[in-house]
Image 1 (cartoon, helix red, strand yellow):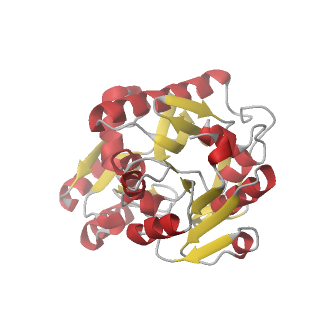
Image 2 (image 1 turned 45 degrees about the horizontal axis):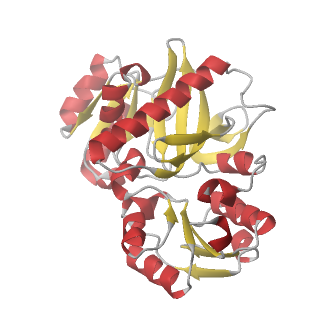
Image 3 (image 1 turned 90 degrees about the horizontal axis):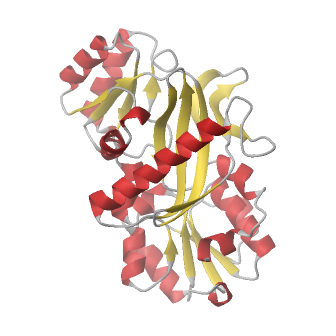
Length: 325
């Protein structure tokens, strides 16, 4: 595909990351921009050339609308349709898409898959953890770790599923209760749960455009998940984010950045070897600088929200150029 042939672009998603993507595309290209979203975002509707409301899990409806509208390229920037195989269906229909196939989208949609994969390819990047189907066994493991744990559902929870000792979990009883709640309710679409050693340090986000095994990295960003000033109050999907001049945040070294990027590269190679499928799309790595080095917190295989705002607004090359190449 040539850049000149991209006259109509479809963005799939409803959040701030889609709004800033649409704004950027309209400002830096002559393409018509269409958006398929599940909730009407007025910032999107006033910028996009055309919008359609519908379930982001209805892959057939998204593919059908893309085909009807003569879309040249689909940017998939949200997790739910990726987990349901939207890119695979677009590929089957001969519609160009920038987003990972379902097998590689598991880096976000299946935390157990990702932890096990990274433990094999970069064991230094993950904390001590185990995956459990039995809640009682998970509670015993948490006790073995002195209750200093993070408790994670396996699947997608819109950034609200992870609970950490000292933040959302205040004592052993709350740890046990949350483990049992995940098993009972199937939070994130699974009754399995990850219990892992609590990491301590400063978190940062490194986002990259992925073309197979090749990454185009961007400057680091940090977001703030607590509702109130001073990192107080309940956890949220995010209350905002910041970046700094250059590529690093004040607490990061160039070596920290390089380690995080190396972890991302190793993960993509391992994912291709594991699944037989190459990745493409927007890869978001959430990392933490700990006393023992850089550790992976999680991956999202789509832009961060709101971290994407910090990235897109500083691009020197139009996004569409970087996507199409």
